[in-house]
Amino acid sequence: MTLAPVIAVVGPSGVGKDSVMEALEARAPGIARVRRAITRPEGEEGEDFDRVSVADFQQLVEQGAFSLHWPAHGLLYGVPKSIEQQRQQADAVLVNLSRSVLLKAQKVFGDLIVISLTADPDVLAHRLSTRGREDAAEQIRRLARAKRALPEGLARVIEIDNSGPLEATIDAILEQLQPERA
Image (cartoon, rainbow, N blue to C red; front, side, top):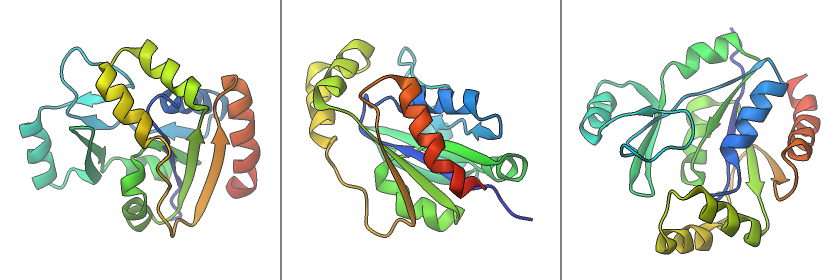
């Protein structure tokens, strides 16, 4: 059985990964989104995710519940093993990943397409300040990391600027995905 590709959406904080993923899923019915487990504290929202405590997360790791897991920004993130079932039922599976785990994800999932989102630094700064999840010092740290390059050795990367209208971003992504999804 052929598994659907995993589409990793990556980019700096504030680039609009969650909005892009939601819009892609709405526009392309064969694309399904993976719900991650995150140790994000109560009161901190964001994407649609499963909130777990650090202790529960570590227990899930020991039980082998994740296909992929990693630390970032003082939190723990996990992609549940259920991604394999999603890959059997969808044309493609979207997951928000950290740039630091892309090579590992390529080994784990095999067929990995990376959508690397970028945006103008002023747009990023504005988005970070309006979402209100980070204090000013953390916003500065995240903006400094925004220019971090992707690791060498990724098989397929689609680079998209998400500074403008979301609809234009989705059009550009779907235009580039079509040959790979055919």
